[in-house]
Length: 210
Image (tube, rainbow, N blue to C red; front, side):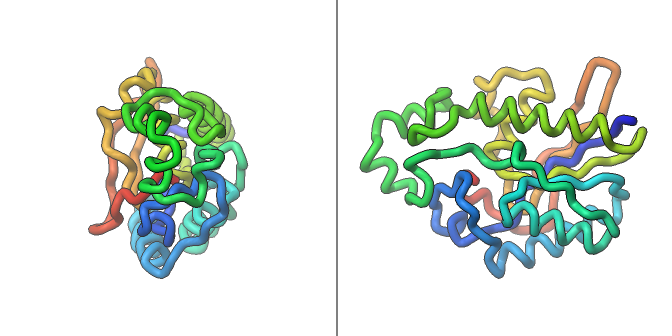
């Protein structure tokens, strides 16, 4: 058993995204705009054929997956390994507040350096756990099928780079995942290949990390 296609899908908007506030592993729910984004995205994804569905256990990702599950009859498998980067003491703060309290660390993070954000996780640590989870679920999916993974912006971006065999130093070469948008990977003889990036219905800003 092994999926031939993996869809990496970021959750819909939350109030923290709209406010440019770090969420990390705080359990912030979708807002009204986010629920509408997810409904539109789920309708689009359901029409492409989905064989397996997994999600972070944080509610904004779990509810995103649930919207697709309601259309496909699939029950999302929730996996804590797909959670967002743990941003430690930065969680719940506006980006402007983090700049004020941790200017050097924040500047290094913005440059793409692999710092332990807010004393929490490094990007490399979150990317490794999320990529391993995607590989594990892809291996368990129906042969030749499509796996949809609902997760978070930074975790998905890091996992995507690793799955493509790229270094995390390439972080800045890709735009952030937009809310309720997705990337599509297909399996090739030498590994995963990126076919689509940031697809989805109109709208869906990038928002804050998380």
